[in-house]
Amino acid sequence: MHSYSLIAPAKINLYLEIIGDASGGYHELAMILQSISLADRIDVLSTSNDSIRVHCNHPQVPTDKSNLAYKAAELMATQFPEAFARYGGLEISINKQIPVAAGLAGGSTNAAAVLVGIDLLWKLGLTQSELEELGATLGSDVPFCVSGGTAIATGRGDQLAPLPSLDNIYIVLAKYRSLEVSTAWAYKTYRQEFGNSYIRDTNDLVARANAVHSGEIVKAIFERNAAKIAEKLHNDLERVVLPAYPQVLQLREAFANEEGVLGTMMSGSGPTVFALFESEQQAEQVKLHIREAISDEDLELFVARTITHGIQVASSV
Ligand SMILES: C[C@](O)(CO)[C@H](O)COP(=O)(O)OP(=O)(O)OC[C@H]1O[C@@H](n2ccc(N)nc2=O)[C@H](O)[C@@H]1O
Ligand SMILES: Nc1ncnc2c1ncn2[C@@H]1O[C@H](COP(=O)(O)OP(=O)(O)OP(=O)(O)O)[C@@H](O)[C@H]1O
Image 1: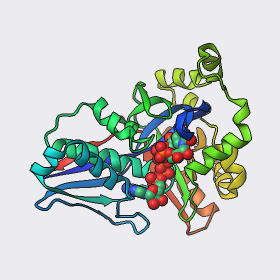
Image 2: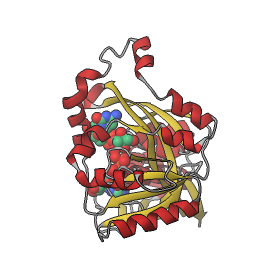
Image 3: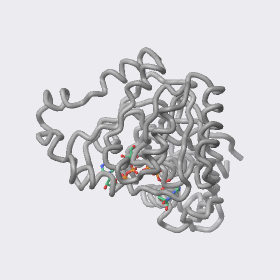
Image 4: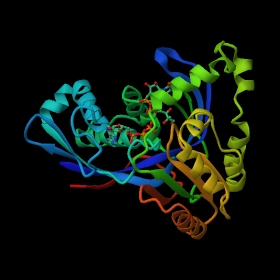
């Protein structure tokens, strides 16, 4: 095989609680991550030269060494120099459907797809946990993007425990195209404003267990009860992003006033806001209403659904 075409799904955060400081300027988290059907397509191709090249159909995405997909390929070339020498260079094409800098792990899922694609292309036979470990060196969201589905993520977001998979909960996602929120800014501002309220002694296991409130949403996930899950959505980063970005707050309020919305929340560090629905029809209807209510061409709206997997192979040649 000389090329693999992969599907790289976005994620939403059903739950994000900041528990404390971790090392290296990161924060210790308790999260629930969920893969969704909104996805990019990544083609990974072996070439006869010895270089790595990235192409993307989206003008906002860099194609140089700063692209996370490039970094993933470079990491594999460094980790497996013999395979790199044997199989030659790599050409990576990104067909971007996931909005950029949106809090949906767009770059992270591209990197995860490149790790999976190169593993197959070079017949390395890496395990899922080996791929996740490599992914963690590229970014906190990358390990989840490899396996996907529904999972609890702790540590800096890279320690994963799978949850029962949630299929076919419908979602509307809303994002202003030109609005970007820096993830580093969101965490730094949270630390400055609320840092003294989280658990500092991270070795105190009882204090930590009491501090994490994710128990109820986890129970609702085990029951596969969409309405209960939607009631327990939570994201600590809303405390800094909503006051600083009135447009994100406006979207949160717009969804909250719509009929059929089970629950609404900002994803990750934003600025995407999502809402959950029992049916596709309700989701489509609310998408239409929001489009009418906020007649701004900068607003992007998508209907998606929860899915049970991360990176998947679409085809190989
Ligand atoms: C907001 C989320 O998307 C929620 O899933 C993630 O926590 C962020 O994941 P990511 O974009 O893959 O993050 P990284 O590329 O690892 O880190 C970007 C920046 O976010 C901050 N960061 C990230 C993760 C974490 N647990 N604590 C942090 O403080 C750090 O300042 C870091 O420099
Ligand atoms: N493959 C990629 N796809 C999208 N953006 C990329 C990629 N590689 C690098 N970037 C850069 O990373 C920045 C963040 O984009 P990305 O779409 O990954 O954010 P995000 O969805 O907020 O990620 P997360 O939810 O993991 O914090 C962009 O502004 C872009 O310049």
